[in-house]
Length: 195
Image (cartoon, rainbow, N blue to C red):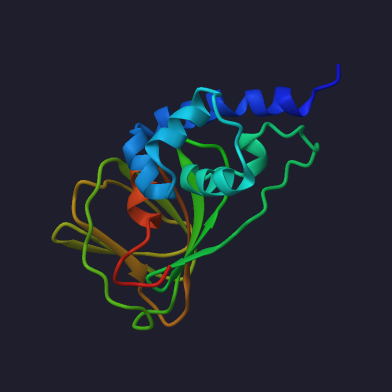
């Protein structure tokens, strides 16, 4: 069966709507995030406007999905995830999953103790789980402080003020899992620090 460009583009609108609804955000909120108007977004979702690359790029970035997922590019058979590290407040986050919504997996690398900007404890909806791969980790959870080493794991309610960082002279590497709420809290741009 031959799939035409029109067939591919006709499927973009429903995918855009499903991604936005999965994130539980309004057209107005997505417009503010992407720089596109709410009217344009509505017309794209309803199939009344043919999407352009200039519109799809900010939408893919906002929804955290590859561009080929928005247009349902045919699978290449290659299961590899192309890791694109994100630097935030002195630490590095490497996404290990690529599907929208649900639990997301990341490798997080914290610089040696004392080499990053001091952060204040944060709170947000959800739960976080992490496993220490290398180094020593300092976890401040409420008024308690814990040190974890390789092979140790922690799980906690993220509504409790928390702060995570390296506790030693070398970088600390973690495997961490969190939901969309945690992802937004940890990966959204900070107005006071470079991304």
